[in-house]
Image (cartoon, rainbow, N blue to C red; front, side, top):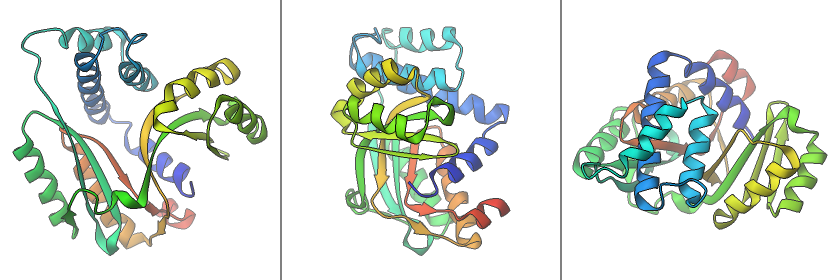
Length: 246
């Protein structure tokens, strides 16, 4: 996806602070707890939990923190979280999808609506922007995993639908229901992946200028800093010259 690696690089540099690391651990712990509570507390028997644990390991979350999150799911006082998706528009009509896990729907909806409003955007109805995205599984590998051709062959053999490669790495896409199977097949061919997750992949990207990018990044930052928000997806592309200024 055009702009994928540039945006990832920007966010990687932004996310190196201890505070950002702590917030990331908190969100991943919540996903692990919810995944374990909804299914088996054993990652080998629970595909969603296996993906959550993999995501946690990808950011070097300590094993004892992962284990505590799983154990929390089995406690009677573990919070009941609802999964909710919000959709809306940032400045210049940029489509944004927000996924959250919350124990207070009113609080989360109010917060998300206020972030959109503060940044010149507006909330939409469910389905208002998601029709412009494809729900898919995404598996990422570093560039060192192999050449673009080698990764493409391995991905096709594993049952993937598409591959995108550049100097930063490889992104392999597959159907949602096939993510675990494709991920496991790829690990046999290419080794451990960096991450395997469900995503909303935009069908068309909109290139933005510096001013628009700054406003959109402020909105994305506000959303991601909210404790209830698990992921934020958008359809804007940051050109090289704009990324350099950011």
